[in-house]
Length: 134
Image (tube, rainbow, N blue to C red; front, side, top):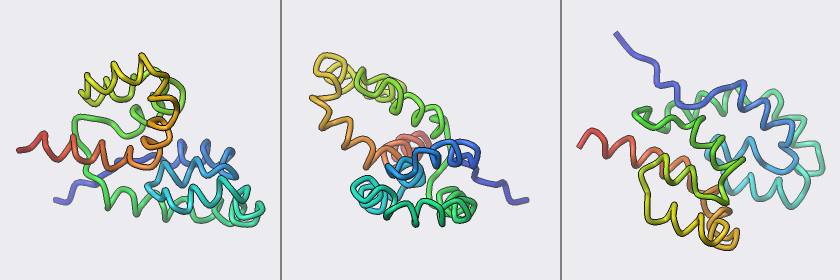
């Protein structure tokens, strides 16, 4: 019996799509390069943003195939980063105590670390989940 690997959630993807002209949903689905392009071009001048309304189910399936589910939930971590990232709560949740403290004391390492986490959060969660089984 094949168990589905459900790491990301379409509902969260669509909620982030509302802010998609800033690339939020693309970062969530592990596409930081296009997320950055969307950020600087307002979702490819809103055209790419509208097209993505129909592409989200495919991006969700691709993320589910790419990343490993496990003890740390992708959705919880992304919510913590999005709303409390400058305090490092997402890093605390991942068990990264030292960098969580640094994020807390420096406002997400002066926001540069906060942006870095937008680029790499899926890989960080994936690594923690994979190492759990070693």
